[in-house]
Image (cartoon, rainbow, N blue to C red; front, side):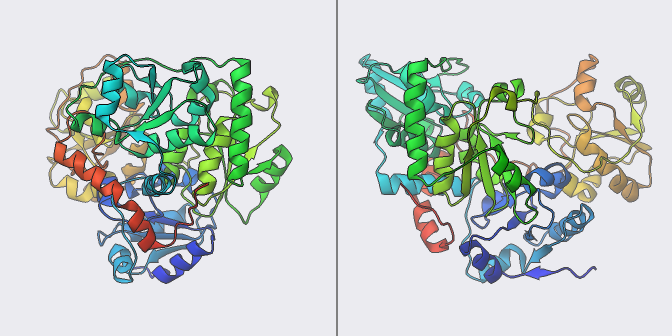
Amino acid sequence: MTDFAIRRYADIRKALLAREELALLDVREEAPFAEAHPLFAANISLSRLELEVLARVPRKDTQVTVYDDGEGLAAIAVERLQTLGYTDVALLEGGLQGWRDAGGELFKDVNVPSKSFGELVDAERHTPSLAAEEVQALLDAKADVVVLDARRFDEYQTMSIPGGISVPGAELVLRVRELAPNPQTQVIVNCAGRTRSIIGTQSLVNAGIPNPVSALRNGTIGWTLAGQTLEHGQDRRFKPVSAHNKKLAIEAARAVAKRANVSRIGLAEWRRWQADPTRTTYLFDVRTPEEFAAGHLPGSRSTPGGQLVQETDHFASVRGAHLVLVDDDNVRANMSASWLAQMGWQVAVLDDLTPNDFSEQGPWQPPLPTVPAAEEISPQTLADWLKEPGTEVLDFTASALYVQRHIPGAWWVLRSQLQAALANIPSARRYVLTCGSSLLARWVVPQLQALTQRPVVVLRGGTSAWIEAGLPVQASPQHLASPRIDRYRRPYEGTDNPREAMQGYLDWEYGLVAQLGRDGTHGFFVI
């Protein structure tokens, strides 16, 4: 076995306290990651490492430390990172157990830095809130009240408070005056649990909105535990903003950013930061995905502001890096930056932009290493092969997507569990690999060829091309060759979670401030 560099818990803790750049990567799948991990660990599973790491850890001489919990994944990840050109990669001494043995605090769930920060905000600022029963009483009485849902639109569509309007978190200060023009109107902000409703409500309070504002305490979870009915499939969204209301929002947002010590830079300074080989700098566009696609700055990534604050570890996996935020209205970037600065990030807003600066169009495309060459077949060729025995289809898409629809007879496989999965799959004369687009499948080809000594080809265009060709699909969980550990089922997602799980999640959130105190590395402050 190759000898790898080792990095100790004490070294990482020292670097975190000194605000030095580092990436602590947990390369397990999301479900085991969510069971226990350090506060600032970023989850980039071994299965998807090549697809995600260049965007999330863009500077290749970043100090990177990799760990697992004894599964043997971390050593493979180190080798892959070195092959990709990363030059300062080490294993965490003792892995996850080593962190625990050294006295390191371990956290449950996902996006924990953001969630624990939200609880700290609530504890220090006593963010106003109303219980589900109180909000229901206001709605029943037809009081002058507006309910604003701070989650992503797709989450809002899954379930929402009756009459609620989708206004993702970063949009709140910009949009609220259009939705509640009467300063006497009671504004209620909700999410599924606690974090985004706390941050959304406190954003409006910090911005000096004249309306009475309250978070829906415990979100849609609290609503459900109170025995109250949610709506489903709604499509109410925010409105365009008048010039007058936009001006008020700009003034308020800039004042909040100044209080949080957010820096302001122009394009020339951004280019100097971008060219600095010793620092990692992310450029995040916090507008809606539709606005980003219509025109954005070259080099920017679409990260709608509410989700950037909620899922910072997913987008910026190098703790200690520079974050530069951009919008075209001087509101959303300032409000998002105000929160990120309080979360200990070095954050700046890009000022003085013109419409001509937003010169690129289309959705964000992640940077990728050279994609491996692979023999391809068409969907029709695969359909013909499947008429006879001897061909097995392996699908590497997300398990939730696989269960919804997949090529009939295809096996769902986790790339990181490939060898174990083969024991559950009949021997084949040849294997056809797919995923949504077949991009991830290409990286599996040499590994599967080495394990089976059989021909391995890729479905051109993936399962999407199969569907576009009008070929049949099935929905079932019957051919799962790997355990469904690729995604942690959040207790606040969907509509079928047990009451015990929802209550347990709320209890966990309430305990996060105490965990922050025990960990001691967070560097958070609250304005």
